[in-house]
Every structure is written in structure tokens, then in C-alpha cells.
Length: 435
Image 1 (cartoon, helix red, strand yellow):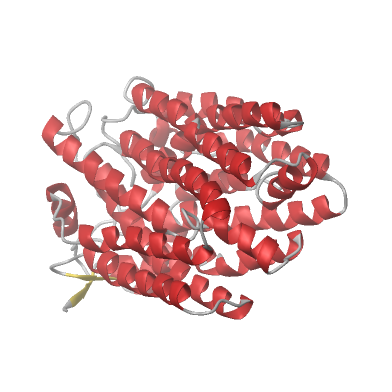
Image 2: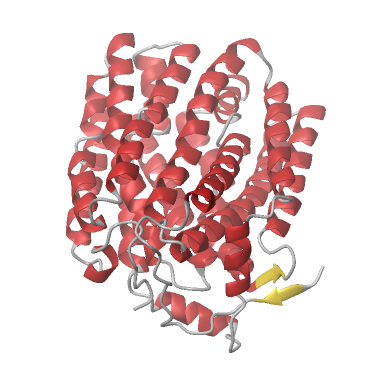
């Protein structure tokens, strides 16, 4: 397979001006459908998808890991995610002239499927589980880098960053709902091996989708083969000097730095509130499910109001999200907390993803998205999880929740650091993203 080094022609090239609301309805429907299917399959098939809850219970109950050791396991398998920018850079520099991003979707999905089948077909111990999960996560990071880069390029080219940020949210939270409901049931009724086989089956869908040629994606792929030649170090310098990217990355880091959630919440609810595995699965599902209504609200408003206004609205509500965890005192209040958590977070998440998409420099969409989105998500999540687990083990769950609230509040001063031209337009209007 012939590979090409794809490099930008002009750092100052602007996005072509689309008509209000983007391109024609048929193209929009195909684009939205393509990325909805792809993102949902990635969300379900990854180790953070349908296998997440059964894997956590297997580590806690069968391998008898403490909260800190469980957090360490999760941190180790997330190392490829933390280094996601490297996978994004590989994608940006080397793609097949014929297949483009689809080469990575197919090859890495095949690797991940093989890893799942191996786990399901052989004895499991801690070392083997750790090694194979790291391999599967690594394959999925490459898949995710290609999918995000392709989506970002299409979104910028067709003025759809807001609407595709909603698709991205649906591709994250819909699998989370399904995974939580199915995962809680699988813990009680199925083996972890069966869960790995199911995850492998979902991963095959990604490989199959690699044969779907999206017209809007083909246009983006052909326009991204740019001249003159830009060497790797020059590309990295251009990324580091691209001012709009870094406030967006810092905001997403703070949004996902949550010492009061993750492992501390898992142990708090299962050990102190003493909810069942099925109820914890329902709790996790409802959190993600109720992100969707406010994400849809963002999709409605993003073509009617500028991003600057939506960022402020989302952040003010998001600051109130963490303190609601104090309300979880029993089964009923735990369900209420899950619903409020989702409603308070969906709008802000869509707004921050919209901001990141707008902030990516031309020709480096994969690297930029993996830096600002995936790596920030992983680093913030694992740092918060490790800190929160240590605080929780010392008897300080309330302190972990307070730190989470303060981290979200720090987003407010960062909003002033965003270049005004980047967020002054509605979705579908001309965006001078490289100005």
C-alpha cells in the first residue's frame, strides 16, 4: 500500500465559506450518519465501552484489587491514550493515497478484535490482562485518531463543527448508556470472557465501515494533499505556535479533571451507599443518557447563537455539576444524582468539543484533536482518578468533590484567552480558523 506524507500548503488558508447551515441536506445526512455509526461503534467496542464495568468488577472481586491498585491499572492501560498526539501525528503525516484514514480503521480494528478473542479463549491473570488490554487500547487510540481527524476536517470544510460536536457527544454517551446497562447485567449474568467476545464482535463493525467511501470525506482527503512539502519538525512547530488550540486544550483538561468521580465514586456507591451492581449500571447509564437532551439542545442553539455565548452558558451550569454528588445517600437519591449530572454536563461538553474542532490547524487535525481532546481527557481523568482515590482512601470523599468543583470553576478565566474571532460565529457561518 503506497503511503504519502500529507503536509499543509498554507498555514493561513481559510475554510471555504459554506452557505448558512452548511451544505445540502443529503450531504449533511450522509455525513451525520457516517460519523454517528463510526463513533458509536468505537464507543461500544473499546475497553471503555461494553467491557468497562465487567472488567472493573473482575479486577475488584476476582483479582481483589484495592481502590488505588485499580486506579493504577486504569492509569497504565491509559498510557497510549495520554500519548494520543503521537498517533494523531502518524495519521496526519502518513496515509494511503487511495484509502486515507480508512486504512487505519481497518488494520487497527483487526488488531483489537484479535486481542479480544485471545482474552476470551485463554486463561486470564493480571499480567496477561494488563498486556492485552494495553494492546487493544493502543489499536483503538489509532482508530480514534483517524476518526476524529476525519470528522474535524469534514466539519471545518463544510461549516458543521457544532452539529458534528453533537454527533461526537452522541457517539460517546449513547455507547456509555448501552455499556452501563449491558455491563451491569453482564456482571451478574455472564462471564468476563463472554463480554470480551461481544466487544470483539462490535469492533468488527469498524473494520467493515472502512469500506464505506464517504463523498465529503473523499473531498477532504483530496484537498489535504497539499504543497509545498512541510517536514515533521516544521509541522510540530506550527502546531505549538497555533494559539487557538491551547486555551481549548486547557479548558478540556479542567473539565475532565474530576477527583470526585471515577474510582472514588464507584467505591463510595458500592461500599458505603451499598447499591447493587445492576443499580450501579443503571446509575452509570442514566448519567450518560441525560447528557443527550442537553447535547441536542446545543445542536439546536449552535446555528442560532455564536459559540462565545454558548461557552458561557455551558460553563456556568457545569460548575454546579460536581456538588450534586453529595445528594447520593440511597438508591432513589443516587438515581436523581445521575440524572442531574447528565443534564448539567451535556451542553458544556458539546460546546467544548465544538471549540476544539474550530481550534485545529489545517493539515494537523489528527494531532491537534488527540492533543486537545483525547490526551487531555486521559491525562485529566487519570490524574483526577489517582488523586481522588488517594483522598478517598484517606476518608475524604467530600474533599475530592470540592476539588472537582474548583477545577471546573477555573474554566471561567480561560474563556477570556480564546481568540474572539474563533467563537464569534454560529455553526454554518464562515470560520477564519487559521487566521
